[in-house]
Length: 320
Image 1 (cartoon, rainbow, N blue to C red):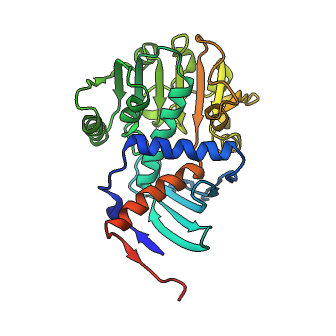
Image 2: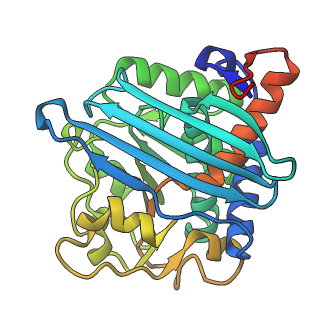
Image 3: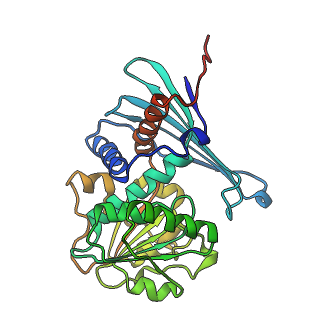
């Protein structure tokens, strides 16, 4: 089994278009019923002072014929300093283990790819502006991924409060789209009202909770499992989508604000043409994005194969 550390993967290059394609293929195989993706497990730990939580996901990607097992542990919600996540891949064609690897870079790639696919499929026709709220690990790649699928976006905006995250977001955008201007935002509510696409991947403390009713007619709000979205978003929107109904039930029930969770479509079916991304051009659409391991597997495989080809990592014989 190949063991790949965070430093082994840190500077590997996989283009946004390649990641988006891999993630879309993962969703489409799932929509066809060929892949498997049980609902993730979440377990808050008992000492509330530590604010610790753990997740695990198991799944199978039919395109690669690989099974993946992902684990995550986080202590404290204000920093990623104590956030650890791994993914293990097994090759079902050969029956052999393939790789055990750090999964932070994988999540930071597949998450904006999913955001981009939601935006491409669910934004109103002629959408011209996008706002990114949050500059953490899940957010820094988002704007280049959006521009990859929606190159006609004329205005891109960013709100963040952490200097390192802001600098990283600007640097990443510059690497992929050096000619694009970035508008920094101070008044979040005003920026939401002026943006066709709003991506929220932040904690609630840095800004007022984002209300879906602040969106302009036709606006799209994408929540990346964010605490920064106001409760009741799925009650107040005109059309709701999610990546997975099962995982919405694990991590997103507060968005119904005590009412019944209404889901109009799931992303795999939208990509497969089975459901529309919105009903009308003026719908305010809310999308809840929760990670699915069927997207982690192909992205992890892409990083692993490049790392192994470059001679990185270690090959460990665990079962000799």
